[in-house]
Length: 256
Ligand code: PGA
Image (cartoon, rainbow, N blue to C red):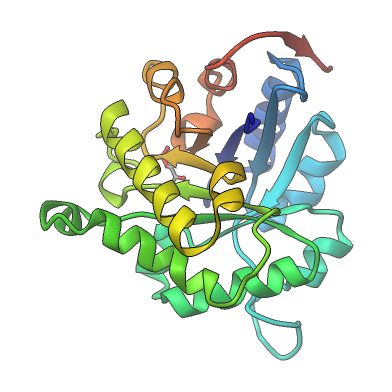
């Protein structure tokens, strides 16, 4: 079976109206593999979503960077899964390490968010990954499986989930995981899913890599058998994102 390559551009908390227009223009003019070969999500800050959605090529889908744990209401500053759905946003990134560490989102909070977002018909890019200290203590596999297990305790169907393995020490640092390091974690996580969730889920689920992915390193990492794509931060704001989208290039097409 083949898992369709999946690439996300996570803009994080970046951009002005002018910058957003420029990035969308760059994306719209880019030659990339056709949607039969690649699935692409673009994740602007909430406030720019309507603008990006109205002018972005239709072969790229929009993803929010977060959403609330449950139905909306008196939760100042939050955005609910229903609102995203209502706006026609198909994807949401949940459990990014910046939210786990800076906003103190626990495995349980992330799992709650994933469960609720899926229940509302959103697709989820679930981020997991270890800190440098955890890697040095040989705890990578344990941390990553614990983070997935928290979600597995609440979620039965994984068809609308992509897992992004993002080692914290590689995010925004320029210190990318080697292709072998990425492959090892992805392979072990897939094996864990096979044992604890199910063999069909293990075979079908896309596990993408994130953390300092660039045009220079994407081909090697993306060539690993258990790496099904990337979640890209910094480089998704630049021209080189188009090169990254072509990491496993077969057929390109342009949508202006
Ligand atoms: P980076 O970020 O590509 O800037 O390292 C990746 C991410 O946090 O998703």
